[in-house]
Length: 126
Image 1 (tube, rainbow, N blue to C red):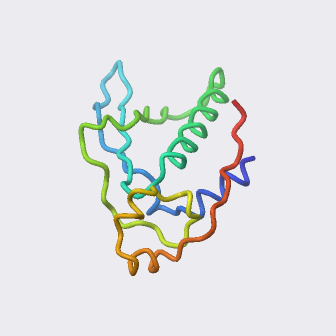
Image 2: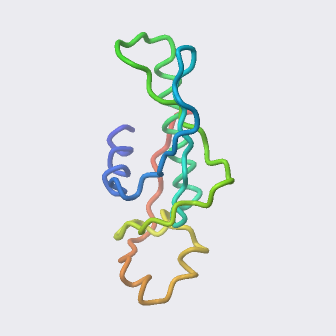
């Protein structure tokens, strides 16, 4: 399962990952939280896939004490701020892109993306 997840991560690279913005600053009693800012071109299915990966990882970590600082809490997008309009990553499977966003592009722009055939997302154990 983790090899398949790594493959999706490698396909997206840094440019395909959501942007995080600081939501709350760390204090003595609270850990800093960041809010996810979605990319306008990323499909909802892709975002849901990453949410499942993060939730699975959190369930696995519960009860395991680990040295070092805890990771930041990642909150879902609030919808208050517009999605990030950063440049889309090229050569991704069709189902990684939002259909409405693709339809909004000129045919030349879609061609430049070099869209690959759809590819199912790996199954994440619930």
